[in-house]
Length: 246
Image: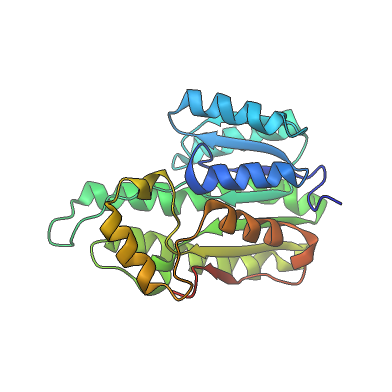
């Protein structure tokens, strides 16, 4: 039995890495997937096909989740096209790492806008339809860095820590309507982004992790399936660390 049969899911930033892994896993579990991407049209088309081949409805939308009006319009369009929304996964994120001494105001603002404000924009857009149906699950992608901080990532850490406070508050506001909101804090996940690091750095990182390996997008996707499904129906306001014990 598929755990998310006929559920309608919105995922932001799904054309690569963790987002792509989540989209595929959700479709394998029977969910219809609406996903956003910022620029990679080719990658979006290929993901759309891959998801449809799994027997579900899928559609990619080029949209900037950091833009409030664009996010509202996007969700309105998805509601028209898919007929509802059961699960929102706020995954879109960027990094612009630098030491605080060197970080520019622009690099601080853009990371906060894409990583944190987008979560507000998208959540605000889905809560009305979810309240109407008195059911919904919102999953926000934070980071181990949002939990414990990291040198050279003040902007990223602030955005990801902000997500945790936002998640807990939404859980308290919407619990009475049977809408759950949880966060996932991934650790070192090996994706296209980490492939650019030299092997020695990656090996060093793996050594510091109790489970002695980096995570995979599938590790995060499995946690998403759990939080999206009825298996977690009494869990809200939580941060699930998927980090190999970091």
